[in-house]
Amino acid sequence: MDITLIIIGLLFCVLGIVGSFLPVLPGPFTAWIGLLILHFTDVVPQNWTFLGITLAISVLVWVLDYIVPALGTKKFGGTKYGMVGSSIGLIIGIIFMGPLGIVIGPFAGAFIGEIIKDSTNSSKALKAAFGSFIGFLAGTFLKFIVAVGFLWFYIVKVIENWGELF
Image (cartoon, rainbow, N blue to C red; front, side, top):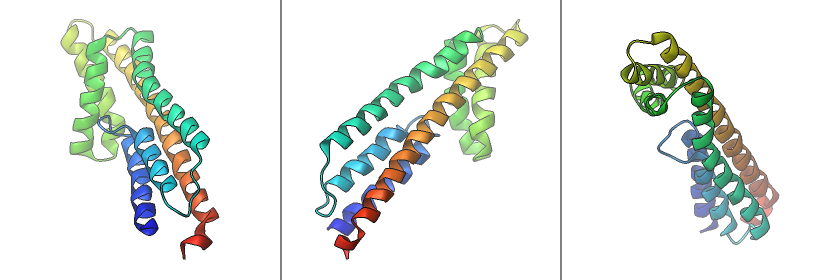
C-alpha cells in the first residue's frame, strides 16, 4: 500500500508543477497534496509542522497568484479586461500553440482584452498587455519554484526512508 501511495503522491507533485502553468489547476496546492499523501504512508513519519508550513506557503502563493498579475496590469495602466484576456489567452495559447502558447497567449490575450475595452488607444493596450504579461510571468515563476521545491522535499523524504520501503 505504501508503494501505491508514494506513486500517487509523486504524480500529484508532478501535476503540481504542470499546474504552475495552467490557470485551472492550483500548482503548489496540488503538489502539497502529494506531500500530504506521502506523510500518510507507514514508512514516512508524519510531521504536522512541516505539512502546516508547506500548506501555509501554498495558500500564500495561491493568494499572491491573484494579486501579482493584477498589480502588474495596474502598474502599467491596464484594466480587468487585460487580466481576463491574459487568462483566456493562456488557455487558447496552450491548446493551439503548445508550450510556446504559455508565453505568447497571455500577452496576446491581454492586448486583445485591452483593445476590446478601448479600441482607440493601441499603445495603452500594448503597455497594459505588457504589464499583465509581466505579472503573469512573475506569478507563474513563483508557483513553479514552490511546486519544484515541494517535489524536491518529496524526493528527499522518499530517499531518506528508501530502506524501509523494500
